Image (cartoon, rainbow, N blue to C red):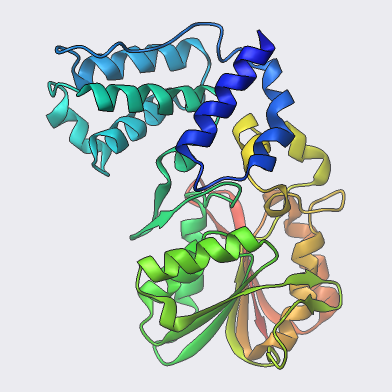
Length: 342
């Protein structure tokens, strides 16, 4: 039974996301699927001349609920819209009586079964909206969360309307930098990520959004004493008006307890903040960003609310910043901090 489930998962995953994912990612995590009973029932819609969008919606929603798939309603709505060739789930109300072609039914079956395996919806439909942008998604690059939109709004408010430059640490899909570029016509961005998959995807999104001329994307690793892997002659010192990052900030011991879709498919380097409190990368950025910033420049970070006092202590010890400020997300949770270089 396990062999059959594993074989089925491997076939469906490789066929649909072959251009997006890595076989090693699947093989590394395949044994973890055994603790989930995703294939205990043979869910499958049989193509026929009367199967409507509404029929399919109800069938897979019930199946997702029965199999404890997270966010079952949102999952099937986004998958159905993708199968229909649209982008906005609001279209489903107008299309509920539409008859699905056999080809669309087969595609829907395939994608819905991926969701049983906890593949995130963003990877299944290969794109996601962030602020005013639609970004391409592919595993294992970290999926931007809705709260990070507030990070962009905060960072944007600290930039002036004149020509300026920003540095992002860990862009992933490129969401933050590309959203800032979309809002500030005179802004130029540099984005540095340790993941080659992330830098490639950021470049791809920049090209699709026609923003590639104002962003430089670099594959390099942030260490305690600076970056390793920067291009020869590349200069960071006192270059930027803004340093922004949604760094890894989850304590190492908590990472295995995250949602299975996150643990199995997203890049752990983008999640694991190191240390017992998850502040290792945050501390590196705070210690090094004064050398990257122009006088009066800002560093803005997304954090875990439990880290506020620790981060404030780091800032006070450095004595290079002023105006330490904590910002809340849309759920009124302390989620971001900003500091200004003296």
